Length: 220
Image (cartoon, rainbow, N blue to C red; front, side, top):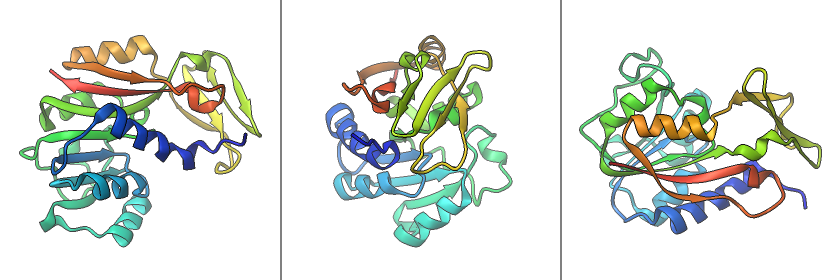
């Protein structure tokens, strides 16, 4: 079966939201790496957030979200360009600073954490979080040590550079590279900043989707 992980990812997000995260309605949401807003549309429709902020480093993605969904700051639903691996309060391309008084109930990192998983990120995240704040995220798991090829697409671990290299034929024009976060490194950094794994889900298949673990983290 031809598998398009980009377009079918929302299905896993929806399953993880309803089956793992089980969020309450009218809560505060932060969507880190919101892309073009597909997850935000689902969140708004099903969970009626009191506060929603979508953040992405790609300015074009932010403009697309604003054009399609609006930027209703007064209604507490809006989008912001920001490099989450940077100093959030001193990012020169940002339009305004985050309001750390608006604490997160739920945080989404959909195919994005690997791009900003630094100690600086977790330090700043804790300023937005309270005990009980939950994060839904996904990361490539240890199956990556074995290369996978599906319908002209592939993904593998470059062990020398500790990078994941991948190419999805239906969307990429060239090979892509991203940081590999091993299970041990992931557990070490979240423990350091007082987060714990509350739930874990790995799709049961032989395809690329099974190379990702979906996590619910909780602040303690």
